[in-house]
Length: 204
Image (tube, rainbow, N blue to C red; front, side, top):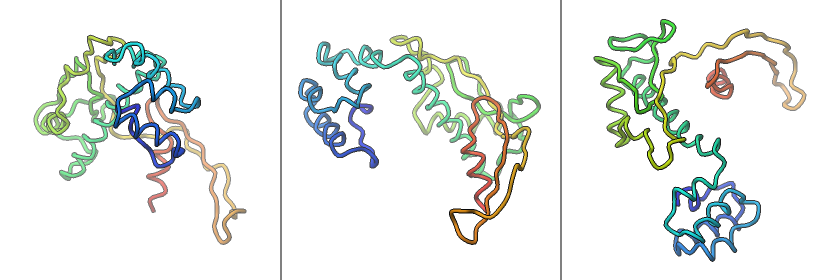
Protein backbone atom coordinates (compact mmCIF):
# COMPACT_ATOMS: atom_id res chain seq x y z
CA UNK A 1 0.00 0.00 0.00
CA UNK A 2 2.93 2.35 0.58
CA UNK A 3 4.10 1.66 -2.96
CA UNK A 4 0.64 2.45 -4.33
CA UNK A 5 -0.31 5.42 -2.16
CA UNK A 6 2.88 7.42 -1.47
CA UNK A 7 2.86 10.67 -3.46
CA UNK A 8 5.86 12.51 -4.90
CA UNK A 9 6.22 16.21 -5.68
CA UNK A 10 7.36 15.55 -9.26
CA UNK A 11 4.31 13.43 -10.18
CA UNK A 12 1.43 14.55 -12.32
CA UNK A 13 -1.56 15.77 -10.33
CA UNK A 14 -3.68 13.00 -11.85
CA UNK A 15 -1.41 10.34 -10.38
CA UNK A 16 -1.22 12.08 -7.00
CA UNK A 17 -5.01 12.27 -6.83
CA UNK A 18 -5.33 8.55 -7.64
CA UNK A 19 -2.86 7.65 -4.89
CA UNK A 20 -4.56 9.87 -2.32
CA UNK A 21 -7.99 8.51 -3.18
CA UNK A 22 -6.80 4.89 -2.86
CA UNK A 23 -5.26 5.66 0.54
CA UNK A 24 -8.66 6.97 1.70
CA UNK A 25 -10.96 4.36 0.14
CA UNK A 26 -8.88 1.15 -0.20
CA UNK A 27 -11.15 0.51 -3.18
CA UNK A 28 -9.13 -1.24 -5.88
CA UNK A 29 -12.02 -1.29 -8.36
CA UNK A 30 -12.07 2.52 -8.34
CA UNK A 31 -8.27 2.71 -8.34
CA UNK A 32 -7.89 0.64 -11.53
CA UNK A 33 -10.03 3.26 -13.30
CA UNK A 34 -8.27 6.25 -11.76
CA UNK A 35 -4.60 5.26 -12.17
CA UNK A 36 -3.49 6.36 -15.67
CA UNK A 37 -2.15 3.78 -18.10
CA UNK A 38 1.40 5.11 -17.71
CA UNK A 39 1.41 3.70 -14.14
CA UNK A 40 2.19 0.22 -15.47
CA UNK A 41 3.50 -1.30 -12.24
CA UNK A 42 0.83 0.21 -10.00
CA UNK A 43 -1.91 -0.97 -12.33
CA UNK A 44 -0.46 -4.49 -12.39
CA UNK A 45 -0.58 -4.62 -8.59
CA UNK A 46 -4.06 -3.08 -8.40
CA UNK A 47 -5.35 -5.48 -11.06
CA UNK A 48 -4.22 -8.41 -8.92
CA UNK A 49 -5.78 -6.88 -5.79
CA UNK A 50 -9.09 -6.44 -7.62
CA UNK A 51 -9.20 -10.23 -7.98
CA UNK A 52 -7.64 -11.10 -4.61
CA UNK A 53 -8.00 -8.09 -2.25
CA UNK A 54 -5.95 -9.57 0.60
CA UNK A 55 -3.15 -11.18 -1.42
CA UNK A 56 -0.47 -8.53 -1.00
CA UNK A 57 2.31 -11.03 -1.64
CA UNK A 58 0.71 -11.85 -4.97
CA UNK A 59 0.38 -8.14 -5.71
CA UNK A 60 4.08 -7.60 -5.17
CA UNK A 61 4.77 -10.57 -7.44
CA UNK A 62 2.99 -8.67 -10.20
CA UNK A 63 6.13 -6.52 -10.32
CA UNK A 64 9.15 -7.76 -12.33
CA UNK A 65 11.46 -9.88 -10.19
CA UNK A 66 14.48 -7.60 -10.62
CA UNK A 67 12.41 -4.62 -9.54
CA UNK A 68 11.17 -6.48 -6.45
CA UNK A 69 14.73 -7.29 -5.45
CA UNK A 70 15.50 -3.55 -5.55
CA UNK A 71 13.42 -3.24 -2.37
CA UNK A 72 15.88 -5.52 -0.54
CA UNK A 73 18.91 -3.73 -2.01
CA UNK A 74 17.47 -0.32 -1.12
CA UNK A 75 16.95 -1.31 2.50
CA UNK A 76 20.43 -2.81 2.74
CA UNK A 77 21.97 0.36 1.28
CA UNK A 78 19.93 2.56 3.62
CA UNK A 79 21.17 0.66 6.68
CA UNK A 80 24.73 0.66 5.34
CA UNK A 81 24.58 4.47 5.03
CA UNK A 82 23.14 4.78 8.55
CA UNK A 83 26.13 2.86 9.91
CA UNK A 84 28.58 5.21 8.19
CA UNK A 85 26.59 8.24 9.39
CA UNK A 86 26.70 6.91 12.96
CA UNK A 87 30.46 6.39 12.74
CA UNK A 88 30.87 9.99 11.56
CA UNK A 89 28.51 11.22 14.30
CA UNK A 90 30.63 9.44 16.92
CA UNK A 91 33.84 10.94 15.53
CA UNK A 92 35.12 7.65 14.13
CA UNK A 93 34.48 8.21 10.44
CA UNK A 94 36.00 5.74 8.02
CA UNK A 95 39.17 4.91 9.97
CA UNK A 96 39.74 1.37 11.24
CA UNK A 97 38.53 0.74 14.81
CA UNK A 98 38.43 -2.23 17.20
CA UNK A 99 35.95 -4.86 16.09
CA UNK A 100 35.84 -3.84 12.42
CA UNK A 101 35.44 -6.64 9.92
CA UNK A 102 37.98 -6.00 7.17
CA UNK A 103 37.56 -6.59 3.44
CA UNK A 104 40.75 -6.19 1.39
CA UNK A 105 42.32 -4.77 4.55
CA UNK A 106 39.74 -1.97 4.82
CA UNK A 107 36.83 -1.52 7.27
CA UNK A 108 33.60 -2.95 5.87
CA UNK A 109 30.02 -2.40 7.00
CA UNK A 110 27.30 -5.00 6.51
CA UNK A 111 24.78 -5.12 3.74
CA UNK A 112 22.54 -6.91 6.22
CA UNK A 113 21.14 -10.35 5.57
CA UNK A 114 19.93 -13.32 7.60
CA UNK A 115 23.49 -14.73 7.86
CA UNK A 116 25.14 -11.44 8.83
CA UNK A 117 27.47 -11.66 11.80
CA UNK A 118 27.91 -8.31 13.48
CA UNK A 119 31.33 -6.85 14.10
CA UNK A 120 32.80 -6.84 17.57
CA UNK A 121 33.47 -4.17 20.18
CA UNK A 122 32.75 -0.58 19.06
CA UNK A 123 32.12 -1.46 15.41
CA UNK A 124 29.61 -4.14 16.38
CA UNK A 125 27.88 -1.79 18.84
CA UNK A 126 27.25 0.71 16.02
CA UNK A 127 25.86 -1.98 13.72
CA UNK A 128 23.58 -3.24 16.48
CA UNK A 129 22.46 0.32 17.28
CA UNK A 130 21.37 0.88 13.67
CA UNK A 131 19.31 -2.32 13.70
CA UNK A 132 17.69 -1.29 17.00
CA UNK A 133 16.86 2.20 15.73
CA UNK A 134 15.11 0.76 12.69
CA UNK A 135 13.41 -2.06 14.67
CA UNK A 136 15.00 -4.65 12.38
CA UNK A 137 16.72 -7.97 12.96
CA UNK A 138 19.03 -9.83 10.60
CA UNK A 139 16.43 -12.60 10.47
CA UNK A 140 14.00 -10.16 8.82
CA UNK A 141 15.99 -10.66 5.61
CA UNK A 142 14.74 -14.24 5.43
CA UNK A 143 11.35 -13.80 3.72
CA UNK A 144 9.45 -17.08 3.67
CA UNK A 145 6.49 -15.71 1.68
CA UNK A 146 8.79 -14.43 -1.06
CA UNK A 147 12.11 -16.33 -0.84
CA UNK A 148 13.50 -14.58 -3.92
CA UNK A 149 13.68 -11.36 -1.88
CA UNK A 150 15.68 -13.00 0.90
CA UNK A 151 19.34 -12.12 1.30
CA UNK A 152 22.16 -13.85 3.16
CA UNK A 153 23.96 -10.53 3.36
CA UNK A 154 27.55 -9.52 2.71
CA UNK A 155 30.00 -6.79 3.63
CA UNK A 156 31.12 -3.79 1.64
CA UNK A 157 34.12 -1.54 2.17
CA UNK A 158 33.11 1.81 3.64
CA UNK A 159 35.88 3.67 1.79
CA UNK A 160 35.27 4.39 -1.87
CA UNK A 161 38.32 4.40 -4.14
CA UNK A 162 37.82 5.47 -7.77
CA UNK A 163 40.10 3.72 -10.25
CA UNK A 164 41.71 4.89 -13.49
CA UNK A 165 40.89 8.53 -12.70
CA UNK A 166 41.76 10.96 -15.46
CA UNK A 167 41.20 14.62 -16.25
CA UNK A 168 40.26 14.57 -19.93
CA UNK A 169 39.63 18.22 -20.64
CA UNK A 170 39.21 21.63 -19.02
CA UNK A 171 38.08 24.95 -20.43
CA UNK A 172 35.66 27.84 -20.32
CA UNK A 173 32.06 26.79 -19.77
CA UNK A 174 29.90 27.65 -22.77
CA UNK A 175 26.69 27.70 -20.72
CA UNK A 176 27.77 29.66 -17.61
CA UNK A 177 29.69 32.86 -18.18
CA UNK A 178 32.81 33.22 -16.06
CA UNK A 179 32.76 29.53 -15.14
CA UNK A 180 34.98 26.67 -16.22
CA UNK A 181 34.27 23.01 -16.89
CA UNK A 182 36.27 19.89 -16.21
CA UNK A 183 35.66 16.57 -17.93
CA UNK A 184 36.78 13.55 -15.92
CA UNK A 185 36.77 9.80 -16.26
CA UNK A 186 36.88 7.16 -13.53
CA UNK A 187 35.62 3.68 -12.79
CA UNK A 188 34.09 2.28 -9.61
CA UNK A 189 33.60 -1.21 -8.23
CA UNK A 190 30.17 -2.80 -8.48
CA UNK A 191 27.63 -1.38 -6.04
CA UNK A 192 29.14 2.12 -5.94
CA UNK A 193 27.67 5.17 -7.61
CA UNK A 194 29.27 7.91 -9.69
CA UNK A 195 26.75 10.41 -8.31
CA UNK A 196 28.07 9.79 -4.78
CA UNK A 197 31.65 10.47 -5.81
CA UNK A 198 30.71 13.60 -7.79
CA UNK A 199 28.70 14.93 -4.85
CA UNK A 200 31.77 14.67 -2.61
CA UNK A 201 34.03 16.25 -5.24
CA UNK A 202 31.68 19.21 -5.69
CA UNK A 203 31.26 20.02 -1.98
CA UNK A 204 34.04 22.60 -2.11
